[in-house]
Length: 392
Image 1 (cartoon, helix red, strand yellow):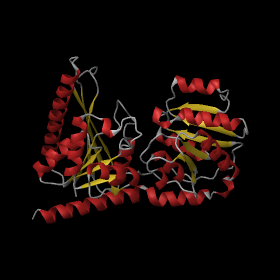
Image 2 (tube, rainbow, N blue to C red):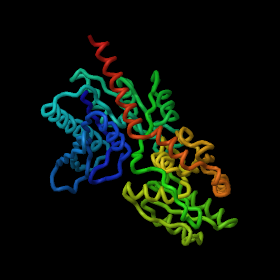
Image 3 (spheres, rainbow, N blue to C red):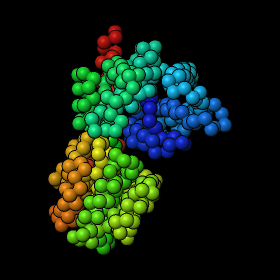
Image 4 (spheres, rainbow, N blue to C red):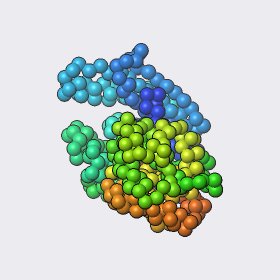
């Protein structure tokens, strides 16, 4: 079985964390069957060559990262047309080159429909094979700043076309998957959650903490509502001081100033962006994880924390409730700072009631590479068998 992934989002030299959750999916599947993956990315106008190419092989995973430069003329509408024409043409060249060298695959797996899915439609017809789509975005939630319904007509119509032509559609959460199903009138969407490298994120008892250590890990973008987290800790500090907060991510000066102005610089520490292995170390040193996002799909950091036996306090958005329950954490209303503060107090006071090792075991059984990779491989076999049966 030969599977070709077309990833609209994927880590590359220019954006090393972009779509890293897709790369972790790819690694999980490649531990069961070989995976070839293509990612095409625009890198701006300041590179030495018009086009570039990076190949890497990690076990059974072959990654082909193609980049191209695009110079704008200055007319917005015309540049968009020129860009899309060039992108499609260049991607076509890449796929033709791939098929000449490696042969055609048995199935195409698209991650994030736009714009890789446009090529999947064309080449699935040409190669007479099926394709499936995995959506990772939370933009189908109405509160999302980049809400799907606000996107351009070109984006919306092509996304719909991609979903409608796919042999199967998956999402990392049932919640957002249902929204996708309803918006596009799909018969069903399959749920394949995000994956955790349980050899890196695992339970390790830690009895050396002097205070309750909270951890937040994210991009620190506006949708993560880190300013709300800081406000909740400001309120908490007025009634108790037996805590500290470690924030992992690239903090803006605005967030740093907010911490300073609240007088919590000795309680809240920014440690910057960290490598994935170092995030795991922070998880193992934490008492609990906090996430207070305005919208989400199915955050990797939550299930990584759970695999480390770290309880989670999170806003109840997207598919978070599919992972967090009374046995492993607390859910609060998004934007409700008072509720978040009260959840902090409850977690600290009742921490002894959480079975940390059991939390880790339960999560590892659901989100390990073996489990999630196996779900994709089973879906591939089913789709290929159905396609073959229907095209005899």
